[in-house]
Image (cartoon, rainbow, N blue to C red):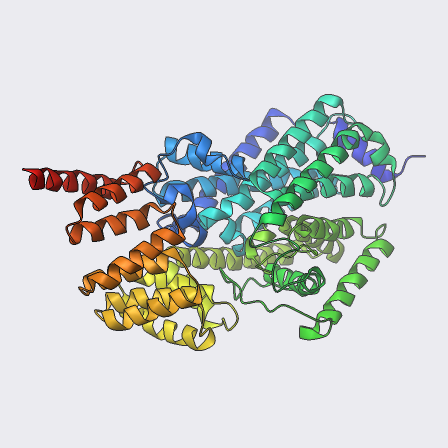
Length: 578
């Protein structure tokens, strides 16, 4: 005799997609989600490019007009294609990218509703209750402040867009019309899976999520689902191995991730992530003390920062999932879903940043499933349930809106991070850079003083010091900081800034030496050659200036300043010949 869950799963899969009335209700709910999403994220729409945004092509006037082939030639072609489409058809201002990010987030919330609805049906939920619970779960996904970094941070689109294609593939898998997946449906799922991996590498976790789904339903830890969907795994396993190999190959050369990451071995990263997982859960339950750049300590031993305790707790939870899989299938599946979605970034493969909020974008769905199981078991009376739900929605919405207000003023984001950072220097540098861009140079000094005490030989901090002091009209002190930075690391940008500063101080000899050093350290830098050309022009060496301007233009044909300089020195040379 078939189990109740088997019958329920089969009836759900064989049921039609829904009546016309159901689809109208779904579209109306989607419209409401769109209104809610844009309302909560409105403050961040006017926010500027920040953090890693500034290194992407759309943030640079010299890079944004490059051909599409240049945009998609890196490791995340689908993501970069989305940015290219964004600026080509909607514009290149920050608001254009923010708006598309919000739209992606709203669509993801709709897909989460579909995923929850099917998983709850497989868990034997009644039709009316599962629709209400799925809608509530999708609303939590939409308004949770922990999702803000994946939406209001433009570079966070890598997470939300990869999740969009992962959820599309998962919906195609869950809503197949028959128990056994067909070859056509396999190709659809795998095509969407491939697009997701082309958006961000951690989408490879979808393979594990699909496997877990077939292991858990219709009966926890059975092989019937795997046998029914053998076609999918016959294609998926080789593809996943190839994708994993590609990711490992990329990690081998990546400066911020991989087993060759300096200062962090894989056992240490594993211990650190055992602790980080507990922080992610805490942030999901109580989303306070959010940070755009967490200062999270590494556990170098099993005892440092209590890593052994959290490792044992995680092991105990996994054992409990195995023991209680039949009694609480939805909660156990949700916890494993959560871990599987986090696995690419929170396992043993070292990544420079051990704790990043946007990594929780998809894993939050697993915790929502646990919440559904808990609510089902508690059986609150309707008035209490609705009241508790209203309070939760109000709190989450308020936190989300307040978090987006911070994204409209990046200095508040970085100031909050810097206030608690004693091991992480980046918030100080980004805060100083943001204040410098707004010419609020005097406000940089207290933060730079604290950063200098905490990180006395940090190259980036010394560079920011130099810029701030020059802005405040203190060229000698600025030069001293830049000279120190150049000693810490032989960097072209430091020598270029130092050369230009020497020129402004009328130290033409030192200026020429510094600028020639900059071009020697980085021969492919258009700005270094342009700055050296400016120096040659200032000392009336017009032939050398013409050569350097030409080199700058050869490296970047869109360099307007180099073009004007080349035109100017050619006119000066013509006058000399006359």
